[in-house]
Amino acid sequence: MQKMKVVALVSGGKDSCYAMMKCIQYGHQIVAVANLLPADDSVDELDSYMYQTVGHQIIVSYAECMGVPLFRRRIQGSTRHHKLSYQRTPGDEVEDMFILLNEVKKQIPSVTAVSSGAIASDYQRLRVESVCSRLGLVSLAYLWKQDQSLLLQEMITNEIMAITVKVAAMGLDPAKHLGKEIAFLEPYLHKLKDLYGINVCGEGGEYETLTLDCPLFQNARIMLDDFQVVLHSSDSIAPVGVLHPLKFHLESKQSNSLSGNNKTNDLCRENISSVFEVQGVNLEECKAPGEPDPEVNDLIEVSSHRLHLSKTEKDNTFSICCWLQDTSGPPTGLQGDLKLILRQIELQLEGCGLGWEHVLYIHLYISDMDQFTQANETYVRFITQDKCPFGVPSRSTIELPLIQAGLGRAYVEVLVANDQSKRVLHVQSISCWAPSCIGPYSQATLHKEILHMAGQLGLDPPTMTLCDGGSTAELESALQNSESTCRNKADSLCPRDYGNA
View 1 (cartoon, one colour):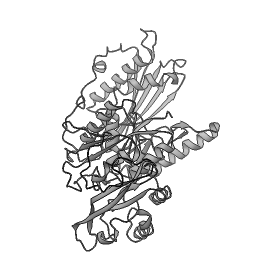
View 2 (cartoon, rainbow, N blue to C red):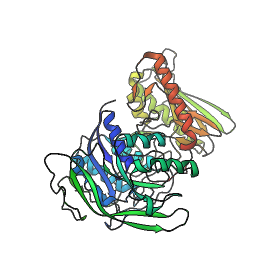
View 3 (cartoon, helix red, strand yellow):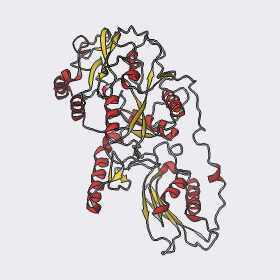
């Protein structure tokens, strides 16, 4: 995989910091960090499913500690799109992320990827992926689906010094546990996991952290001088409290002191040249969902004697196969043939009162895999996220000697459901879990207790490159990737998780 220049979404928590460290481990370069904070500096926490804001007063120092620019935006939106899969919604807090990252991309055109610390929340991951897709950026989520006990130990071993800034779980007491280092709390967190089933990394909102030092902070570490404990709920079972920073200073790690180092910070710092406030209103900047692609709608219909259709039906599903058998007509190439085929299938679906959102699975057969990129460019003009609000169908892409068999350059088979009960697993982020779907298809589609899985290659998930060792090693890796998809389908296909990562 090509090494990328990355802007990292940071909340100040341990997860986003460790995600940056994993990016560097896989050869990428962190060139900027980005943070979303409340409109009012005095507010510690927003009612947000997306963003951790407790401790935001200290994030301004990350630019100085890391030596990279920090882009910040004050959150103007709120939670308006409540469904699990996100669609562009004016006024939603996700649009603030879009505006923030769009500005980063304008200021640093070499940025090609976004890092986030998502571990288990599909709600957050899907929104980051949606924004990345709109901006043409790759989502990197190296902590996704990793074992939380192992992750917590790795963070501590790799010298992430983070303290708790919010507690909200049975067994955690604001008076006792706020401001404590995760290394100190680790044994107790595992005890609470055994007793009450909490997430040891805090993925269920049990606690939030603020990183004061880690290997990424090459210039300075943050020293918290004074803070106030604010009790939000005095519930006797699971009291909720946050840590409100009052004063801090930076302690230099270099022989040459940083400007303002070792001076108490009263949270009224002068503007640092490498900190950029991103303004702009929360409005749509891209074409509206569902706006038609004129090139698709202006297709010239192919003569019926060249186009072949086959349709079979069973219970509540049916399949449509389509191909151009006679290639003696005007040469249109693979892209031209595929346009005609997909358009004909689209017309068949419309004739049944259905659309691409009802498709469960697509077999895409092409005559030459060297033309896969061109085939995919055509494919994405028809099958899009906007057209498939319940999730894009799973897909396999296979090269076959179609021309020799008299079946043209492309052959497409779609499996269609008459209802809208499908659920999909569509992870576009590059992670250590399984190969990402960087494209308009899902890893798996569940319908009527049948799991329709996309084709898997013998790829190494974090690098997205074929594993070494030949065909045997690739087969083993492909089977492992399939197993990962099956193993995680139950959690990821169930739209029930909301939480701050």
